[in-house]
Image (cartoon, rainbow, N blue to C red):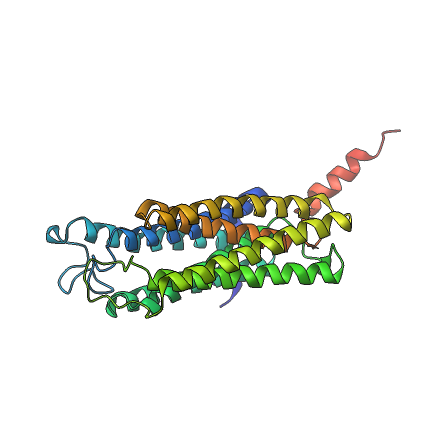
Amino acid sequence: MPNSMNPLQLIADRWQPSARFVQRAALACVVMAVVIVVTGGAVRLTQSGLGCPTWPTCTDESLTPTRAMGINGVIEFSNRMLTYVLCGVVGLAIIAARAREPRRRSLTRLGWAQFWIVMGNAVVGGITVLTGLNPYIVSSHFLLSTALLTVAVVMWQRTREGDAEPRDRVARPVRQLSWLLVVASAVLIVVGTVVTGAGKHAGDASKDVHRIPLNWRELTQLHVDFVFIVVGLTVALWFTLRAVKAAAAPSRRVTELFVVLMLQGVIGYVQYFTGQPELVVGAHMLGSCIVWIAVLRVFLSLRDRGELASVPAPAGEHDALQTASVPSR
């Protein structure tokens, strides 16, 4: 498509967003990625997973929930509608990144990656309903949401840094330790989804909803084991950064991660010993998103890509500034 016919180019020709606007649009994607996880959890915890028993419509005869479907239909349908809000926020981030000069293709690619993850996850959500809340599909649905959150956080970080080749701020062994932290945290999240798939919150009051046929308590113990691994790696990374006298930013990010892990641990223990009340489980899901964001921020803080480039002044304006800077004789 010629540039003159490209709608994104037409917008770029007429609108020049500030760097701060692009950053806020990317941050809005992060916030919406968390919101979609929490509201999806609300659907499960209120037993509204089959509030709309089919997809893409709510019933075979109606696009929207009917009065007979009650509050469960409203909750499920509202969560579906949030996908359109998410698409709108991601679309705004793509447009803002495309219109910003100098153009940064890496940002628009990250924006489009989010869009296609949202589209793919919408289909997985539909399959979840059509399969009667199959726990393996439900787990995939959550993990795709985590992938969306990952890309959103990376885009947000990229809007605040330059495009130079990544340069490690720490020695290679320290960087490898951060990789271990990321991998262990990812496994922790995956195990957490399996725990949920085997637990009592099936997402619907029907006894026909299939659960993962594994011992829930043993899975929970495995989940706790990985929590201790992640906490241990976090503490080890903090002491390592202090020992090598790393920059203040990475140490601050690790401290933030440790605080988040402690709060999430408290929520997890309360959830376990109180019989998994819905509100506490929902808080734990929110906490898992915040933990993952904190882990990614630690990892991304250990490399440097230079300063964010400023928008070059137009040629005429640049000449005028040069002329004004020449003292009169």
